[in-house]
Every structure is written in C-alpha cells, then in structure tokens.
Length: 489
Image 1: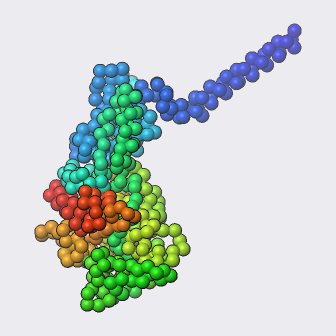
Image 2 (image 1 turned 30 degrees about the vertical axis):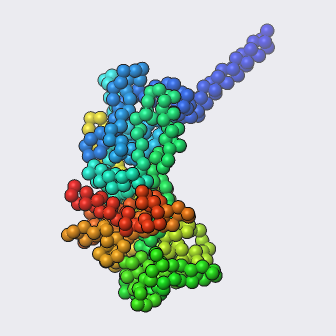
Image 3 (image 1 turned 180 degrees about the vertical axis):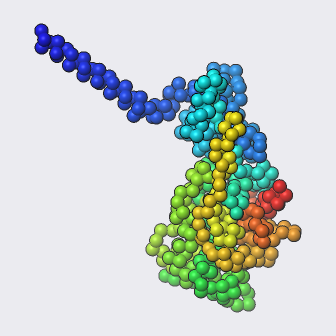
C-alpha cells in the first residue's frame, strides 16, 4: 500500500513541477513575445485604449490620443500630417510595425519607461487614467513648413540642422502619408491602408532623409577637398590638373565635366578653390587618385561614413553612409572622389558634413527630441548637445567655408544666394543609371555666424526629371527658402 502511495505521490509531484515549469516558462521566458504578438487581444486593447502622450512641435500636439465612442475609448489622431508624418510615423496595431517617433519613443508615450514608474504608481493609487509622457521635438514649425513647400510634388528630402548643437530644425521626406487610416480601430481597414502605402509610388512609409542612401555626387567633393587640405600638401590655391577630359588609368574610358566643358578654358591647370567653385570633375578625379584610397577613406570615416562614429540615432536609427569597400583601383578612386560609383550617403549625413564645417570642424550628434515631460509637466529628460567627432581642423573648416562661399557667389550654387547673407554651399548632380540624375545641395548660413546647415535631395531630378536637372537649378532655390525661414523665425 505504501509503495502505491509513494508512486502516486511521485506522479503528482512530477505533474506539479511540470505545471509550475510551464507556467514559469510562459509568464517569464515567453512574456515579452506573447505580449507583442499581433493576436494578443489583451495587449491590443491595452495599447489602443491607453492615453498615449502627445508628440509636440512648437508647443502644439501633432499626434495625440483623443476620446472616441467605441470599446477602446481612445484613438490616435494626427494633425497637419502633410508636414509631420515623416517625423511622427504612426502607431500600428502591431507595435513592431510602428514607425517614426511613435515607435522609437514608445516607452515614454506609453508610460512604460522606468523613469515614469512614480507616475504609474500615482495613477494606480489615485485611480486616474494612465497617461503617457509628452515628447517635445526640436522641429521649428516655420522651417518645417518652408521645407515641405520647397519640395512640393518632388520626391526627396530636406534636413536642416543647427550646427552648434545638432538640433534638427526640419526633417522632411516626400511623398508624405496620412497616418490616420493606419490607426483605425477596424483591423482590416488599418491593414488595408498600410498595404496600400507599402505599395504606393515613392515608398512614403520609408524616410528618404535618414533611411535611404544615394550617390552624393559633387557634394562629396567637400570630403575630397577636406582630405587634401588635411594632408598638409594642399591649400585652396594649390594648382590641380583639370583638363576638359581625363583619361582614366587601366581603361579606355574618359572622365568629363558637366556638359563636356573645360574647367578653365585658358589652361589645364586650376586651383583647388576654383575647382570646387565650378565643380570640376576631372581635377577632383585626379586629386582623388593622387591622394589615394587610405587618405580619402579616413576623411570620409572622420565625417561619419562606415559607422566610424558608432550608430547614430535621432532617436530613429540612421542608415549608415558607405565608402566603397577596400581595394579600389585608380578608375574607381576617380569616380569615388566625385561622389559617384559605390559611395552612398543619406541626406542627413551630408547635412552633418556641412554642419561640421560650419562648426569650426566639430561634428555634433543630431537629435530630434528636445524634452520629455510627464503628464504633470515635470521634465523626465532633456537632450544635451554632444560632440561626436572632429573631422577637420578649425583651419581646414575656415578654408572650406571660404571655398564654399565662392560656390554660391560665383559658381554652381548661385541660385541659392540671399541678399545681405553670406551663404556657403556645394551642389551635386549624381548619375542614376539610365534615369534622370539625383540632385543635391548642402550648405550653411550665415557663413560668418552659422545658424543652420541644410541639405536638399531631389530624387531623379524631381518634376524637372531630365538630364537638364542640376543641383544648382533644382535644389539650390529650395535650400534658399529653408535658410530664409530659419533666419526669419
């Protein structure tokens, strides 16, 4: 009898331990996975029913939770989405497919952050409806509006950064999208809206400002010029070989200038400063080959290419800009030195290049969130400016600034001139296979007291859309509007 009882007790013990183990596995090990599962109704109800904190631009909520008459009680609402959808993103039913600040500041908006634990305890004790924290952005409404208006129907991106701090004043990617259908409480309607946007022309759900990279064209000549000046072997007045066409070693091909023109019709020699002013391809191609791969790679990485300064988040992760893989032959070096071939950059990266030059050679970490405030308006966190690198010396930065001013006063960026304001800039036109070229502008103003660094990128020439599209004709006037908005705000 005792033997039978012992066997029964052993079986019961094993069953209890198995049950306890299974419960522990589900409640501890699988908890996060189950909470995030798209079919977890309890999580969905909690997520959609909670009062998320607002996303604020210039003191106004552009994304907030509003009361609705359904089983959830609250729904996310986005206002002025034409201006801000590329910043706010949207809150999806499945939080893992959310985008923008809705995703990357979710811990604050949903009050899940450890910094808000006292707020959650207070809400439990007082019976108050839980409220998320407010995320206050660095965006300046007038500058954002000017950037959106400047791009118009063009597909592209504009980024404006404060050089001394890294504050992002404008962040635009077009085409924009309406987030409101994506947060419908009807799951099928929301899913259909998301599918439609994922298949829409221009991929509006993916930011071209920081999540896409393109050949930077002649804007990369700033980095080539910086490498030359930093080497100590060149000055702005150094003479370079810049013929009408340049034979590329090891090939039968030739490098030519825009429109087949001569850099200097009087001679095959042209100064470094004048090469930048007229955006001479042949002289910069030869300069790149003379400098060599190591020097140009080091300079690009000093400006942040290849993730040399670590991952950049604004707080959304920024796609890493790329210098071509090692082992470049001379023809590839020539193309790389003028921003063609396998060199690829995000618009945000090229804005940071200008911002570093404007800031005496010091690069600051870019950021989009200024302050996070609890529902009682107490400050949870404030972003402090942070230096992330010194890509060039202050002397080189001053030389590049003077050279970039010549580009605006006498060169390819003349359509970006502003009366009474010293503007420093570089334009770019990057080939894209058989399609119309991408056009670029990157620069800053005032050159003697920089308040803003701006980049304009227009994909495949935008509405100009043909081989006549250039950075000077298309992008420079857009940059002018953004700079004026900053100086007038």
